[in-house]
Structures are given as structure tokens and as C-alpha cells.
Length: 200
Image (tube, rainbow, N blue to C red; front, side):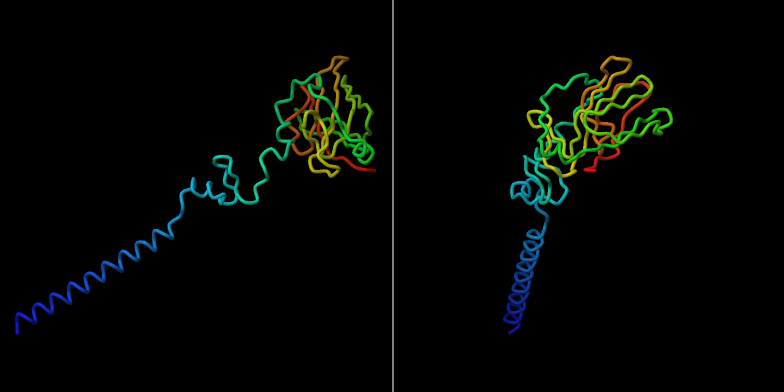
């Protein structure tokens, strides 16, 4: 009788132990399935977190396509440009629509505007030996085999200018409203700012 009782107790203990192990294994597999996936796997599934930099050329949801905003490609260091190295091809509709640009000449030492002018295409601003010619007013400047406008909306306003200092060309290129320090004139005292563009 005692032997039967001992065997029954042993059998019940073993059954409980085995069923407990099964539950631990089941819990572990549930935890593992909820564990975050490696970022490389997410990149492969094109499921990166929003704002995450691309991995293997995969972009997170909502990220603007790389290369779609060609104005970013145009933003090379341009402080020593003295001639346009690409063709200028601004659509006629854009030229007719955007007629005015407000340009400021900034004193680098004070950071203040010493001259502000609202100008049209072809106008010249003269100040302290500087001669700034406004070649084009562009609402959405992009670099696509040359300078052009990506649309007729003010998504990336800029002006294309030629600047002379005491008769010598010191700069020929764009001045961006949103990126004022990306391109600018190569001058010891002054720099330019595009305050805005308008249709009237």
C-alpha cells in the first residue's frame, strides 16, 4: 500500500513538473515572439520606425524619397562661384508669375541689414562698391541638368544673381531664402539675404 502511495505521489509530482516546464516553454516562446525585430529585418520588410535613417536604401514610412527633392543636391558649397556652371532653364510661366524679390544686404560685423530692396528680374542693387544683378526669381529652385524650378509654388524660394565688387565678378549663383548660408557672396564685409519673393 505504501509502495503504491509513493509511486502515485512520484507520478503526480512528475506530471506537475512536466506540465510546469511546458508552461515555461510556452511563456518563453510568447516573450520571444513579442521581442523587437532586428533593425536589419525591419529594413528588409520596409518597416523602419518613422524618422529612422535608411538602411540598405530602405526608407521609413513617410520619409521623403531620396533624390526627390533635387534642391538638396544643388546645395554644394557655393561661396566661390564666379560663373554658372550649369544651364539656367526657368519655365516662362514661373518667370511671369513671380515678379518680385526682397533682398537684404547684411553687414557681417553687426548682423544688421544696411540696405533692403524689393526688386524685379533684371534689376540691379548698388551699395558700397557692390553691384548685384537679379537674373531670375525662382519659387522652387532645383538642380536638374541645370537650374530650374520644380514647381510654380514657393517650396524653395531663391534668386539667381551675379555680383560684382568694384567691377569684378565675385559671385554668380543662387541665394536661397531657407538656406541663407549655404550659398552667398565671397565678400569680407557683406552677405546677402533673400527675405522673400512675391507675385505682386
